[in-house]
Length: 467
Image (cartoon, rainbow, N blue to C red):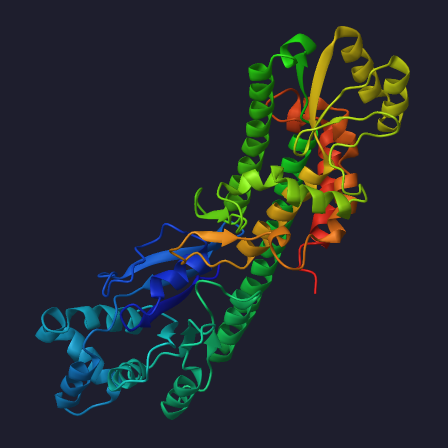
């Protein structure tokens, strides 16, 4: 079996070396990421595993702290080739004293490493110490791929760095923002490394292909997580005897408990998405709508947002309107069966299938009120969760701030009209309250699984943001 590729990750203190490795390996807990300089003090290995084997072994090194003084010292050593001077330095006392940190970097690069990835914070000006670092690294006689980090901000000085690298003889380079890498950035990184390691070109191409497959699998898994959460909410039904519903405190608690259950399903879907993309619970949240002061889950019951969502679904401006001659009570996105005659109940429920029809009949005969979620709530939830999935797919594992995502409902563009058919596709869940996870057969039901797969395919078609 072919030995794994070995890359030393080198660069100045606080350039984003550990952050790059978190993103490339999807190991959010690796090392320590901080704005404080010199966070990494020792060389540490981390593996990228593909198909159960180690494909790449990365060596995270400390930052080069005093490159100008080290370059001056290397130039005082007896004459010889540059790599011979580096080796002489590593054998000498200075490698264990004044330049201990720099020695760890050079030892990693001159050892078993096939190449180096030189991480550069492009927000920094091109100072003499950075030129000295690059020169020292070129003395190690190993291929070097500059990785330009933080390229998306206005403070980036890419042009200056491009010129410096050309002057240093480093003509190949790659741009990779560790916080928000562009789609396909990982694959491009390995493809570019093949120009420096032609003997390992086939392996690098295989890594890029495997990463593309993994990205596709993550996307499909994310769509299934969103679909599962939507089915849970669509299948929700809660019953309360009519005499209890007539009691105002009990009625309010009934509605409040139902809304809390909707929020729990929404939060579970968020946590499932975070897990799919290898983030920790709490690493992301859906941002509050600006005019609201509460959790994002409360947006699902905001009358103005529901009104807009209802219009998108062709329900007009009325939230809570039933089918046919049945008029349900408007409860901010929730419906309470309130038919007054058996005939009206039959006429209103017929279009929903026989299973919900018989439930309505039974409930009316027993004097039971049944609370369900209306379609506009499902549309808002689908919009929010899809926005989060899109953002996580573009999220690096180095970010220290909690990701806040705003669904289209909060923007000027409004809700994605393409989600209307998705919400209508949730119809079968209405007649299967046992499909709500935690309330019955749940996710193990074959019919639920079939619906989940169908909805996931629709979500996959909507995954890329609309132009």
